[in-house]
Length: 276
Image (tube, rainbow, N blue to C red; front, side):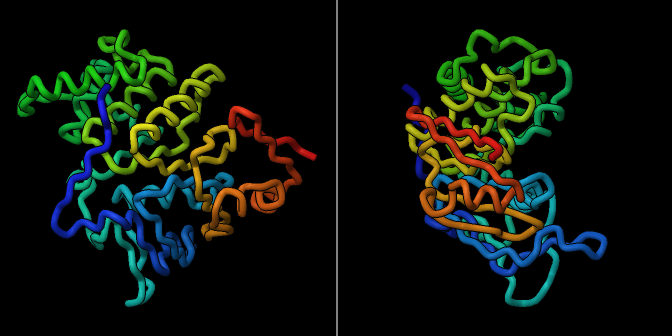
């Protein structure tokens, strides 16, 4: 069985600290969409970032991927990823895998699932003539898609896949470089019930092989039992941050969503909420 976790020690990379933010803000049109965020996430944690729509979760992810940059608010601001204040996300692909909803729509219509996964080696959208594809890469892709249960769909074009099928191929793409941390941004968005259940199992399977997960969501049904730290975002600020037992409860969730809810956790770990 393919083992995903390979620790690659590189000069200058802080292997213990994944994210270090101090007094980080993002200001657009004179409005703070992220407001004075301070947090540190270690690379050995499984973290849930949860909050209502518009709470700042997506902006936080865009900071990590370099699609947005923090606004200068003073010399005491710190914004580091694996110890770097400046980073090229392509250079960190052996440390960090990212799956977002937008990624699926970046691929043109002729790209197959296998090619999409293979493109993860090159941080590209598809395979091009200048890419040198090795037998080792092809074998690795075959192992990963087998691991995720989509091997039979390898030649199907991403464009005509269901959301659930495409999501698994994009997760496979993020895993080809053996990332230490995998970021999943709203992974069950647009998935039906069956696909959501498969995704739930896949996340647990990935964790069992050592890769850590940062799960960004507004749905408690996405949350698997192994997630041990919870960061709640609200109105561009950190509303709560703590261990599962301290933060992930009916009282905190009711305050977060400004709605009286009750959290339910089944014996098999599935979570849901009901309005009370």
